[in-house]
Amino acid sequence: DTGVSQNPRHKITKRGQNVTFRCDPISEHNRLYWYRQTLGQGPEFLTYFQNEAQLEKSRLLSDRFSAERPKGSFSTLEIQRTEQGDSAMYLCAIPPRYAGNTIYFGEGSWLTVV
Amino acid sequence: AQSVTQLGSHVSVSEGALVLLRCNYSSSVPPYLFWYVQYPNQGLQLLLKYTSAATLVKGINGFEAEFKKSETSFHLTKPSAHMSDAAEYFCAVSVDTGFQKLVFGTGTRLLVSP
Image (cartoon, rainbow over all chains, first blue to last red; front, top):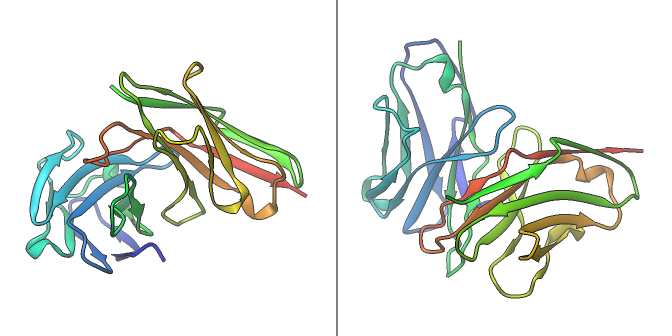
């Protein structure tokens, strides 16, 4: 149990459609991270939240991507006008409940754009 | 900028043999280093982490890694491979514990034969 639930686990969409992924931490965490992992690569940082504030965004996060964390609990990652290059696994991660300099990943949401 | 290099995209061992997965890092400040494991179609699971305490770090499933500053390395080892160890392994570095942003290597796929 990673303490993070992600939905949907798999999504196949046509190019040009919008998709939204959701991340639900099981318990309260002030920080929440999004990473993207393409086939054959390691995860790459996309963005992170401190409570409801989005504090940093990677240059990988184009204008078609938007992430939110209302009320500082769950988070959503929306991709508008999907492109085939968006096909990847989108991973949500949270730090330990108490002090600890690492992060724990959810199971991820696979996106396939056809 | 911080980075990690994983030598060998694939490593094959026989069951019962020593596992050695290589990771070299680049960082201008003392790094925090991590190994994660990823099973097919799943998220990443933390194996172990180095955070400037003991240089020999023991993790889950019998894995351990040794931080060698002089060699800028953080290789992952396990004395005896098990079939269930077959997975993708990622080395990662972080230099900001407050931020917990990780930079990952490209991964090494471990294949275990009977």
